[in-house]
Length: 141
Image 1 (cartoon, rainbow, N blue to C red):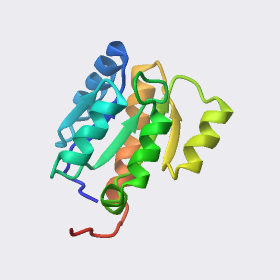
Image 2 (cartoon, one colour; image 1 turned 30 degrees about the vertical axis):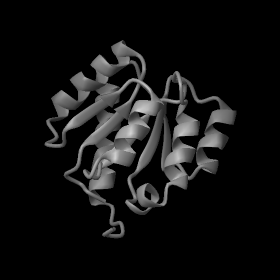
Image 3 (tube, one colour; image 1 turned 30 degrees about the horizontal axis):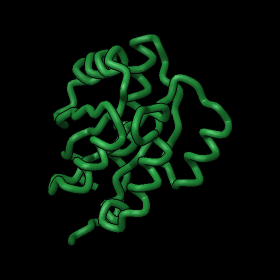
Image 4 (cartoon, rainbow, N blue to C red; image 1 turned 120 degrees about the vertical axis):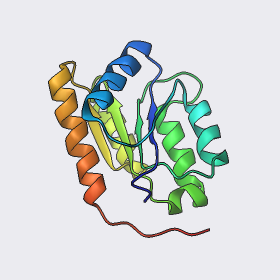
């Protein structure tokens, strides 16, 4: 796990992107924050970049390739799977079927997006610090 790598946020709603950008700016992590508006853009980046991201935050309901489909493609890609990039879902609601589908694809977490800035900031801080302290295999291709 590349703890200094970029944090990937896959979110099709521009207001949510702006909100998350403000939250991360307030937390002042040194990681670059990279936004994608749909799953296809994110998958293209993940499969072509030589940079290993630190963590992926993904919405569920997105155009072209939804979050569950994207997670399946990431998990099926041996190179991406072996990088041990934490993959977390952020959704407006936690529909039980989405939660079941997410965990069946070995997602590392499913969170409901708080609309309150401070609650979101606390949630992101807890998540990022957890993964900063987590040990994972070193993957060398």
